[in-house]
Image (cartoon, rainbow, N blue to C red):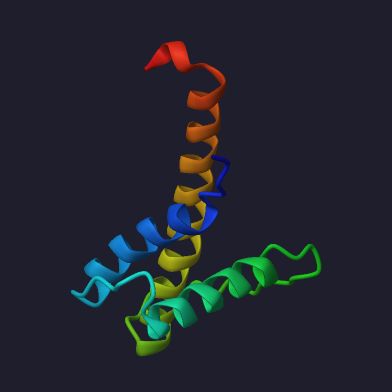
Length: 100
């Protein structure tokens, strides 16, 4: 029967990143994990806006702010990019079943 794999394909890479950052994997029904997923998706949507202006600061010192930004980038880029790639690969496999 038809199904939409978007949610599970977004949760899987995010959970792998969580296991690296927090040393903890979450159940896909865990409210903290769902809130994190919601915030990551919201940030990706905001950062994808053409109106966003970025200020590139070339400081290389290690601060808590830089660490926070790096972890945020990891979740945003890692989760969205990986889930989109997995969805596209799944669609290609469905379209060309002889490959499997």
